[in-house]
Image (cartoon, rainbow, N blue to C red; front, side, top):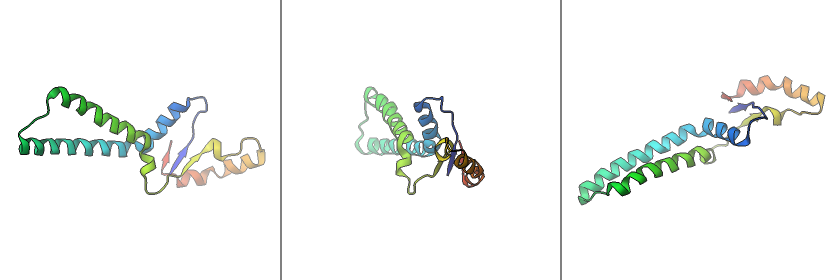
Length: 121
């Protein structure tokens, strides 16, 4: 699925954020839009049925905090909800770094990994 080549000088948090954003952004946006759509639809049905509305002092913080919390949670972890696991080729981890012969074999095999990857990150 992914071929990941990266700089070892970057922080772990930045690497994780980049990978999570690339893999999980679509599901996070879909979850956010579904949540917002369900919230708007249910608010209209609730008001029509009961005639009661939520005070703005309560609704405004909830309208900001809950969707953002859902988005961040899905952005950080929606890869765990996939039906099949992602395949990631990490160049530094998959190519031997100290044995010259194994390193040569690993570099020679990069073409196959790149051809089968859907995304290059």
